[in-house]
Amino acid sequence: MAILPVRIYGDPVLKKRAAEVTVFGESLRRLIADLRDTMGAYHGVGLAATQVGVLERVAVVDVPLDEEGTKRASHALVNPVIEHRASSQTAEEGCLSIPGIFEDVTRAEQIRVRYQDEQGHGVTLDADGYLSRAIQHEVDHLDGVLFVERLSALKRQFLRRALDALARGELPEGYAPPLTHGQGGAS
View (cartoon, rainbow, N blue to C red):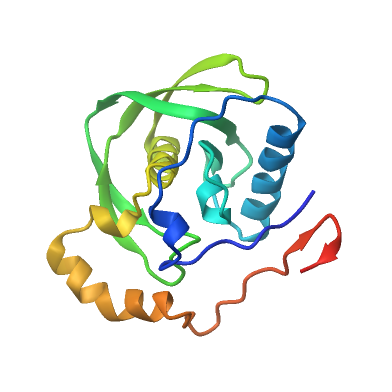
């Protein structure tokens, strides 16, 4: 498949709400495969279609369930809707679209999410812990919300210089995105 370039903070597409998927076919399966390949190449645990410039409600997650990373929860979520949230947890988050910035974010500890799979079949998933956090983060992306918007105004002010630098295209020192390629070769 393809490794796609991940859009960086300041790109207007990251602030847009993605449209619901109505056609389940080969192009959706290709998008999901590309999202998985891209997420892996960037060493992420989740990726939303909006992060690669596609305004469709599609996200993938691949979260380790144990310390060794041998047990994993891998899901492709089409048109996800979080139906229930319970308790709360605060933990550090980062984002492939906001390289170099990591901050504590409070989210629900447990969620119930309803979505469709690649074929359009309905799925209901109860998730907790890291998987719950990853799904909430990706659903936020599909709604045009970035994790830094979940921080206090004071914390956002503290990050302003770094965020403005990203918006100007100034990437953190040492940041090297993977080479991206489509079906026609390097791009």
